[in-house]
Length: 363
Image (tube, rainbow, N blue to C red; front, side, top):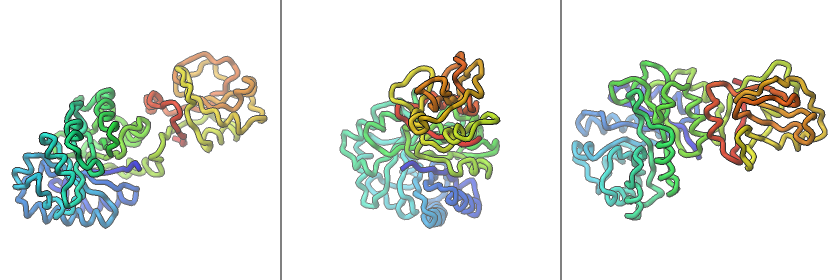
């Protein structure tokens, strides 16, 4: 089950601000928390008191809490990888190792008697994970989570991100990546405030578009907002968003007939298995509405990338088939352009695979 999550930074926010944020996001369906110990510089007892209160409140709202740590933090807090009771005492459900050990230690940690999840860094395409797996970890307690990148232009490129993530997918592990909210004053654990995404191409995109892209790629399970705090408008853009299949925001043409409108907004869509370079094809509507007369009403001279098409009855047995154009092309005169995917989401079209399901909502 895919989940949405948030990040909190107790050293940079008041307790009241954090609790208010947890309450609000729980009402929007968020259920996972990334909490950071890397940038905290306080005595162990003070950390324990502060984090325990936050984490207990988070649990009361149904959140899972994973705390970001490293071998350095282990040393500063005098914690051994053989005894993780400190993290259980502060109410964490797991720890994320920003930097790891040799592989054996991580595998041993997954059998900790406290039942804590051990999450490892996914943003390096190296054999660290393979080494951990060679040491026979409890894979049901082993997660993967990407980094986020506060410095502009330092985020992962798309192909490298996919390579790193597939390394974890092959073992069937639960995975996560970060998206960024757009407020220029939004902060993370470090002083730089230039957005905080995993993928560089997401840095300037709206929050909902970043999430849709991750859903379309079908690579990670959980999608976490990395910085604080998203605006109410950003959170509202996620309301009702289907986390199981990609949703495209669309603009429909004026005067679209009722059946064509129903096909776009209400029918179940999936890309045909025999993929081509020009269209995403959803063909079930031509079966359901066989016998209906689809008149030619908006056969534009040019079909452009992102246009949503429903074939007219002039195309014979293709009548009623819905397509999304992947390239600009000439219209035969038989094809109705009934709307378009909003421009900012055109790049997501490239991620749709054969048989992948999708839907539309009015933008």
